[in-house]
Length: 360
Image (cartoon, rainbow, N blue to C red; front, side, top):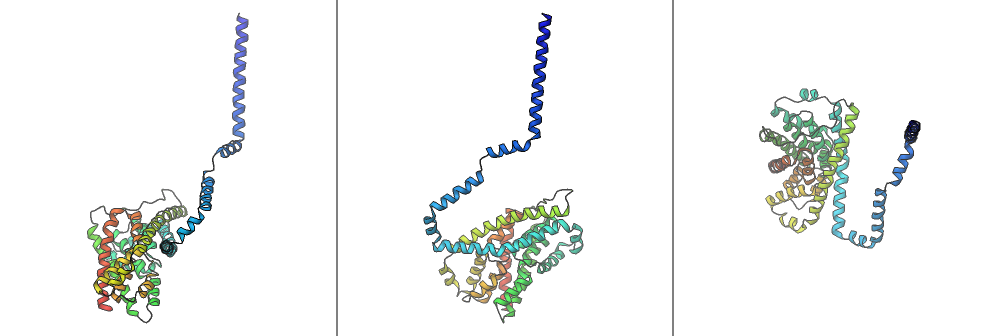
């Protein structure tokens, strides 16, 4: 009996050893050839991306006649043209603003702004507003840069003054205005004075409105601790281009839709009434969301309207429009945009009326 049990025990021990050895060999073989296992897993996965693309292509092929009829609709063609024109005009300057924002976040130390701007917010507002002349871009570029300034500790009122002045008084805008209104330097001067006044007044108002209130959401930094400067630049740029770009497209879609639905008869009916014409063109500037580098040519074409009304169009547009409001919501929050946009609209309209009466 003892011999049999010994033999059974030996056999059990041997079997377990063999099994253990088999498991080890299997484990070693699988670890030795991980790529083969990954290839099997990858082959077993369903290529959802390719499948979706194929289904979309098949749907377009089957419904191409219907699609051609839909695309031939005049209103849809106008909508597409307006949407593409807004995005195409804005994207290069949006990229410029994102690159400047990433550069500020990654390479400019906070101490620079402490030294460059006065500590008194009331004095920092005109300094930041005047600095807007150095950003050769439109409103799409100024939003991410202003967000970066707030993130770096700049007083929000000063950052907002920069946000409003940069797309309205930079050299490119002034040159385009001079080209659109040849032989009328007073139009260029009126636009500069009214736009800069709007930025400063709104900045000073925000010192009082935003004091002690959580109205502006400080944009988060996406660089983290211990990250190199170039990595911080890459992370900030990647986030801002996706975040701001998404709201740019959303705002452009809304602007194009309203632009198509706006009846032309309404504009023609009020063109001969000065005060109503000023208000209509100011609202029109908000709706059409034209880049500040191009809006002077649109204003010049509105010859049926008085010059002050066209000035209101050029002053209001760069500081309040649908795509700009959408981008401000994405960067600073809904509560901020709900208060900031109406204040800016009223101030810009008032500055345009006063300066137009004075200089034009």
